[in-house]
Image 1 (cartoon, rainbow, N blue to C red):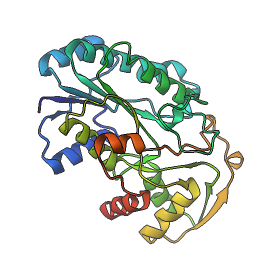
Image 2: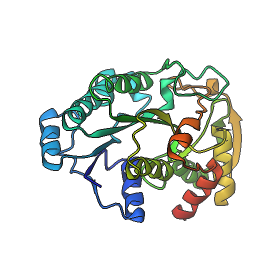
Image 3: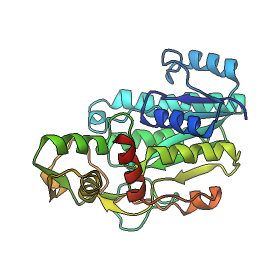
Length: 284
């Protein structure tokens, strides 16, 4: 296997990739220092590509502050669109396969059927729009790419919903959690495993894929499961989205159909509660 360049190495998914690569003894992952790996600096990126001649490039770098993006449109677009364009351009020049991480936020979330890759993307937030724009700049520049849309990402690394709920559960007697937004959590360790499987099998079935854990839940039910499985005693009260206003609008329904990725890779995807139990066990 040839070199694999990872951008966004210090983020949640980047750390999970390092963890899974160590478990699998995948030696070819390169996590360049952040001062060399700014996806907005085309000259430095070119130097990295010339140095390492990567067979694969995994882009975990993104602007993910969903509410702040409503006010910081320019910087969100630079990172989520222009940075991806830089990587796609270089992947096209050097013959590298680009693995781009995207999101369920590219959908409006107004339906009630699991979303397939060909469903219309109609984002309702700046974050979702800029991530979709990032998807759209890839194909004109390279035909060797995987776009993996995921949702509700969590792990034992970085900041995420699971760790926030555990912290608040220790600090408070009662929590109010939204119940009318429905989707599927994704354990970032599982997603990292999917990415490495794509690389290890040298899968040539390029295109857009959906990946999260199996099953369906609401944020309220997700929080309740976190407390139940971790033995945390706290009262949880379900509330509607309207009772917890945020600057950015979230999709109400973002359950994604994983049939395509399962058929292409032959992978078994764990149920979200199984992976949640694994994560909580690692968190102690």
